[in-house]
Length: 198
Ligand SMILES: Nc1ncnc2c1ncn2[C@@H]1O[C@H](COP(=O)(O)OP(=O)(O)OP(=O)(O)O)[C@@H](O)[C@H]1O
Image (cartoon, rainbow, N blue to C red; front, side, top):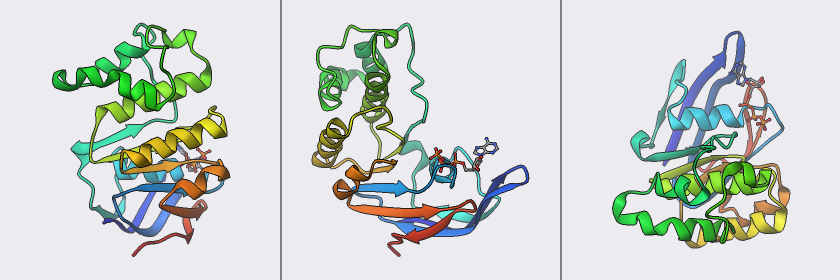
């Protein structure tokens, strides 16, 4: 189980988490949901070890085995779609690049550079690269921004079928039925409306 206990954290004088607690299984698809600015990204960053709690503790996460998808794509402009994937795949799994492009419905786009992709296509490529990295847990910040709902649903179904453990933020209600659990949040400071699994 992933466990946050009484975590307090903020930026300067702004407190985003104030003795916040949450328990989640590390398996399946978890969607974090809540209004813009409530603290979802901050929560993901804490889980990824990109931020440290000022107080409280986080347990149940192996930091070296966690992959993080930032809200920005962070693609390399000088690498093709295929190269973005082969760059992160270990040698023995390098042939998998096609699998990740197929999952994100980018088959046939392997030779394109990021500037030749639409915003939603670039987002899907960033997601493909994050998943290709591998790991015990994938923390995905808005993986489907700019992606149409039908396509996002198919991709999320694919992630489920591969049994990848993901915690993602999203604003698209149509994706909620595909999650194993939905954590409803409000804030700041971050408040749990429902979804604690402790
Ligand atoms: N680097 C930062 N410096 C100062 N304040 C920040 C910083 N990052 C976030 N905040 C503030 O922390 C609060 C939570 O931000 P966060 O990005 O976690 O929200 P969010 O729920 O992910 O929002 P969105 O759905 O819009 O991405 C907001 O009030 C925001 O202004």
